[in-house]
Image 1 (cartoon, helix red, strand yellow):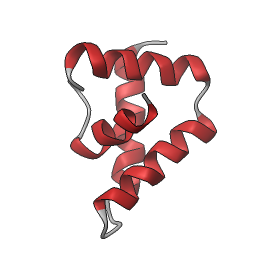
Image 2 (cartoon, helix red, strand yellow):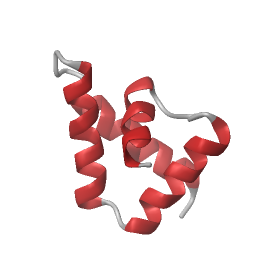
Image 3 (cartoon, rainbow, N blue to C red):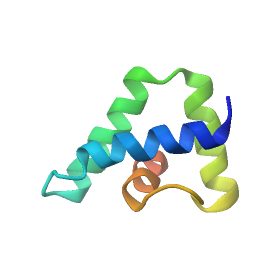
Image 4 (cartoon, one colour):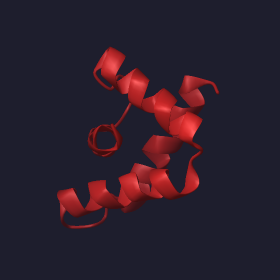
Length: 70
């Protein structure tokens, strides 16, 4: 899948949870969403991207959540 599309989706999911007052809880919620609704290949691809680039293109919350996946 196109990494730009995955980055966009991850950032949109993170934006939806960013209103939670506790950043750690928000990160867990985003990571949980990715685990429940993304195919394993999608998760693997975004984790590999985050490792290779330091999370380039991800918001801070999305970067933290993706870090919890890998």
